[in-house]
Amino acid sequence: MDSFEWNKVFAAIISAVLLIMVIRTVSETAFHTDHAEKPAYTIEVATADSAATDAVVEAGPTLAELLAGANASKGAKQWAKCRSCHTAEKGGANGTGPNLYNIVGRAVAGVAGVKYSGDLQAVGGTWTYELLDTWLTSPKSVAKGTSMSYGGLKKDRKRADLIAYLASLSDSPVPFPAVAAAVEAAFDMADEVAEEVAAAPSH
Image (tube, rainbow, N blue to C red):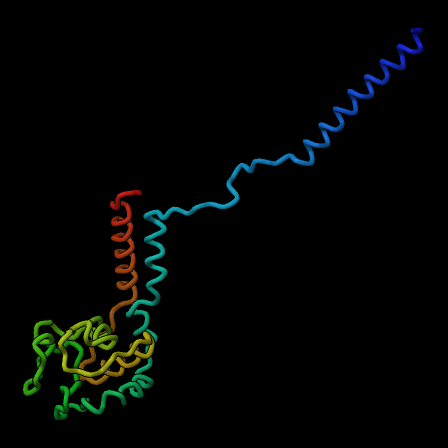
């Protein structure tokens, strides 16, 4: 075989090798999969800080904030639902329920001549804004055996309006709780949640 023939053989071999390399390169490019440095999605794990933050966010406006923006005139309209059982004039007679003049700061179940349930008498203390808010949300949550048939006012702002109206029915209305104090209480609650989450066993 002369040199020309050998050159043809070598050229064919080189062409074949080059073709194989090209095919390999193309196939790797077509089917190459990049491995992301980060997962396509992340699994969020609750931490003490995130749980505490969620607790504050989900809590919504505090009672102090609601009362600060409450409208006693609107509360008077809510009061219309209470008038079938209560009076609110100074020195007014009791109805089915007690007269509510000067209710804030008064002893719970403390009006003479009213037949209170044993559960309400067991509550003790005085009618604070916080207790009134809980009571007006659901009386049975405060005193399960209460004889009061009122189902509760579930909307926060309407309830705050009603409380503001009741607070105005006094010779010396009790000041609303300070918003700053309420915010501090919310952060205290967040800290407590954070401590509980941190102390919880991990799975």
